[in-house]
Image (cartoon, protein in one colour):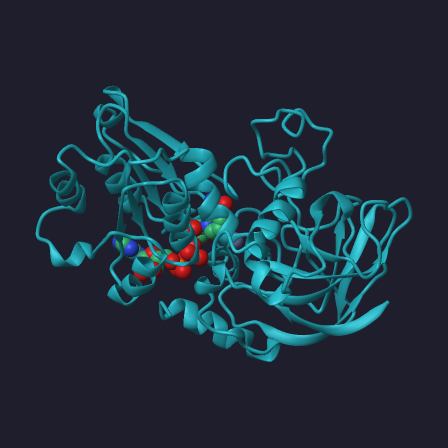
Length: 363
Ligand code: NAD
Ligand code: ZN
């Protein structure tokens, strides 16, 4: 058993408390990882606010981390102590019908099929003050050590800087893959990206890498525009600067609506606006933002009748995580894209709540 620090969410709506926790050794088929760096994603904020479906408290959040294998359980063959790894919140078991379909990134062992609040044997490896603490998406990267199933671990290059590539566990891969894999943005096309957080900015990078000729970035926080332009946005607009709805503004700017639109905010009204912003015939809208659990959306079906497509994208569409994350890390090391530009602040672990304050403040 390792004693180390972890940020525990005891109940929804309260700040995290950094506690000493006990982390049990990995059981068969599991890997214990020393987490070196972790990002903060809006999905962690949904969890803290009690809006993440089927989450259980107390819980150790965090799902955008990178680290080094500390020890392995019986039967683990794909990683060994000392390997650099990224724990995956979308596993790749390799056996289910989705894993066997080359077009899918989905694994039936993901949290969409059953909760990942405990490890697959239905027990937790975390305890604090004699109480069992739940895992989050199996990965719980807000702990100095965590235990995950082997099929939720990607081994990456030894040269990878863990404080930079941790973003590949969620934000970067989600946004970049939504453009490349889900939308399949075509060279010369026009795109609109709603929301310029870590995810939306990564969508901008993906649209640019795919050769889009016009990328219109949309956010109510104009402080996001400089970074969006640096990453490839050709136009940046703030819906609050216009009297008319933003979908009408985008339709006028492009003549008929964009070819591809993306929502990376997580609100029903902006999803509908993004859908209506793509052209009525071949336009493709990709939903990336997450609505609070239990929400419903109603739309005018006429928006779809003429041929528009509404797609969803989880963790970047069809990345097969154990195979593709190491390849993305290799591309990063070859400087094919610069995801470092997404990093705004680097804080010591004890200041994790300050990190959430910065996220809430749009910084
Ligand atoms: P973020 O909070 O950093 O960014 C959201 C951005 O949206 C902010 O810049 C904010 O100013 C902007 N915004 C808010 N309201 C707006 C409005 N009405 N119009 C225009 N812009 C508006 O969040 P993030 O970490 O980038 O995550 C974005 C969304 O993606 C969240 O809902 C998150 O849960 C979701 N997400 C989805 C996946 C997936 O696999 N599909 C993975 C990670 C995150
Ligand atoms: Zn995330």
